[in-house]
Amino acid sequence: MKMIFKNAEILNENFEFVKGNLCVEDGKILGIDCENNNTESVDCTGLKILPGFIDIHIHGTKGGDTSDAKEVSLQIMSENLARHGVTSFCPTTMTLSGEELEEIFRTVAQAKGKENGAYIHGINMEGPYISLAKKGAQKAEYVRKPDIDEFKKLNDICNVSLVDIAPEEDDDNAFSKEISKICTVSAAHTSADSNHARKGFENGITHATHLFNAMTGISARVPGVAGAVFDSDSVRAEIICDGFHVAPETLRMAFKLLGEDRTIVISDSMKAADCEDGEYMLGGQTVYVRDGKALLADGTIAASTSNIFDEFKNLLSFGIPFKHAVKSCTINPAKAIKQDMVTGSIEKGKNADLLLIDENMEIKGVYIKGKKII
Image 1 (tube, rainbow, N blue to C red):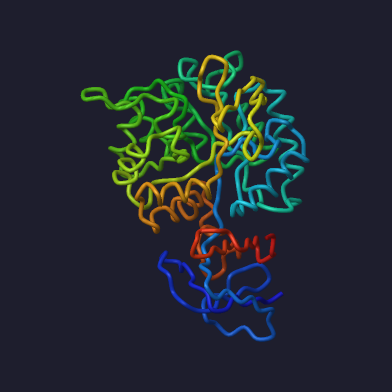
Image 2: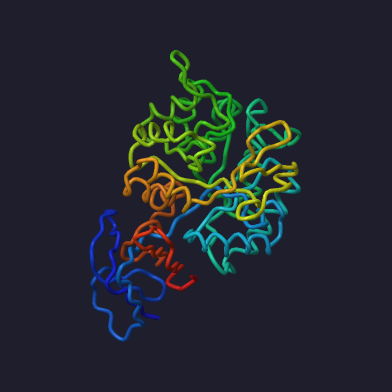
């Protein structure tokens, strides 16, 4: 099927706006202002076309959760994400037993390729290989040391796009050295000092999970994991940009220090996203949502109720430049999970994952692999 999106402002592969017509064929981008006869035409006068957003860290939304281990929950997530301009995602697990993880992995494997909205890249495995002291909303009884054999068994069931570890729990960096050959390894839920973190970065860790949250922070003489991330030239950092998990002032600092290519916006949302306040389950624990803020009974922050399109608008209101904010929702997460040859920018040969917005930053269209979803 051939399509042409006419009279749009198109964010090109260099993340610069150009006026023109975007050509799509069989779900792939052909190019801007290329020849494409006998096409279905979409008038985009007054609209901007961005790459579809990519959420690489999401537990749930609209009442569905990855850890439900139900295909219907993944379908709910897929459809609701698309409504928010997210065209692909990584369903994210919690710290659970091996048996529960196997069931979740089998469910995701069965759901891949059947999505009605945003499509699945692979699983984000948040836990169980974390620090007990920095477990956050993860369940303590299932926290365990990084296990190469367990990981490979799970990855054989369904591919993992990203796996979290606490670097200080990875003896001789054996896990990060081996598993970084398979997927992205991230520092997360960690009590590591900057030296432990730096050693991990030298041995396969290329990512940091929800920067500032559930990790050692920065002080004058103790840089912590966050300081080690800033000191690195290559490690990417995902950040929850709902204005609650990280203060706007801190977000501005992080975006300035990390630059355009190392920031990644994530939702880290749970099933309470787009639902009313109340009590919800997350990884086997009760979460209390009040005024959109998700907390455990002891006051520990437990995921978010946001989505990355709203966070993108937050960033603009916080003063983050448009180009930087867009890249953090598109090409940067694609690169983080090694999918940047498939999606993440408007470039010839990539999936036609497209987000159409108007001058008021309202979503006016979502296309996934060239198919109109909204």
